[in-house]
Image 1 (spheres, rainbow, N blue to C red):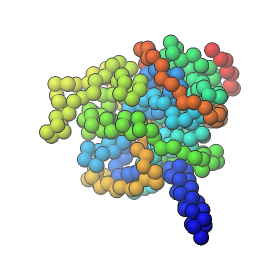
Image 2: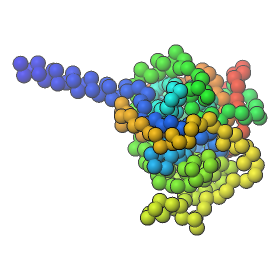
Image 3: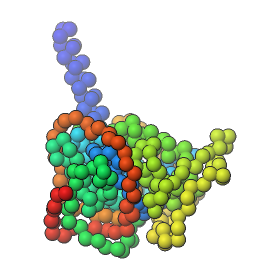
Image 4: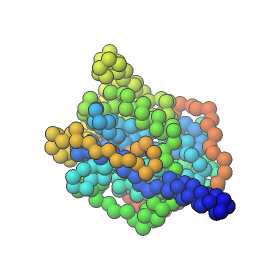
Length: 347
């Protein structure tokens, strides 16, 4: 009898663990107003060999509204794992946030074009080869002083017309539906955002200059080279976090982040045109319990469209080890990319 009870207990624990790690796209929060359009911004160079890019996104605070979580390079939780960004989905009445996750395949992220390899489906910014991550420098920006495992995938062509900064899936936004391979990826084992990623979002939520209500959809800091690392504005110039007044939460007006130049203002003219329901509904927030305790991760935009085919390798080994960081210029992105005949050459 005792032996049977132990077996049942083991099976119960195993089933609960499976539910936690395989929990599908979970909804963390929903609101009645659309997220702002995605800002166009420069991608900082990857500072450490083995780090992966996680695009910026609009998160939501019940008191302050939408705020921008900068795109950032992070260490994956395991070798062979890739990041599927979160996304906002609209069902005609509310905008619900679907959490991002780590897994061996890229899942559905709403068809949203976050740029730098995340063109709406799959990922074209790099791939795993054994224990190492190879970076596609036709798509992403790396510090060549420390990153040497690169290649060029010429399945994209430049298109200088940028006309899609949509930040959500659903009516009025992106109308993409999951592909069969994306649905299959939803059944893979998943890992929630790392502690580093969760901290990254929390820090952004304490910086009032990141809130759309304060920046009109143009955050002071759009990207960072690593968590708690260097901050960059839309042009790739150094930015500063804006200090908040602890008494009332208002920004310290003596500490302003760098303002964008006129060229960038024109590049982001569409950022103010995101479809939004009645502003009277701004404070109507609905909380949902996530299936895992993941913090949300979503949105960025530069403008590269990657190949539809996802090239991944899933070998297990040691986690990437940080190396000494060297400063490198950020890459400004103003192009969409469309698939054509593939030609690859390794560097």
